[in-house]
Image 1 (cartoon, rainbow, N blue to C red):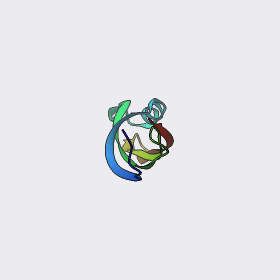
Image 2 (image 1 turned 135 degrees about the vertical axis):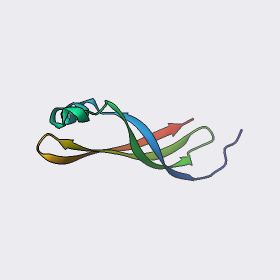
Image 3 (image 1 turned 180 degrees about the vertical axis):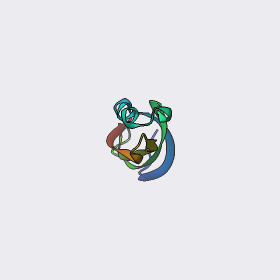
Image 4 (image 1 turned 180 degrees about the horizontal axis):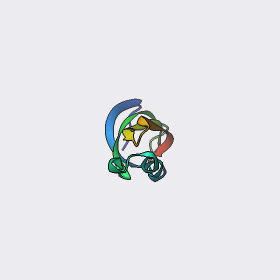
Length: 96
C-alpha cells in the first residue's frame, strides 16, 4: 500500500473531564462549606494539529491542545472568588 503525499491540518473544540486534586483542595479550603467542589469536573478543550508523510511507512505530526476551567464561588465573608486554571499541551508524534 502506498501512502499519498498529503498534508493534513485539523482542529476542533471539545468537552473534557478533568481532575485537578490540588486545585480542588485549595478551593475547598477557602470556599463556603456549602459550596464544596468535586475532584472531577468538565473543562473546555481547544485543539489543532498537522501531519505530513515522511515516507511510505511513517508520518510525523504536531498537535497542540489548550484546556481551561474556571470556578466561581462565594466565600464565607469575603465576597466572590473566580479561580481559573489552564493547561497548554504541545505534542510531537510519529504515526506508523
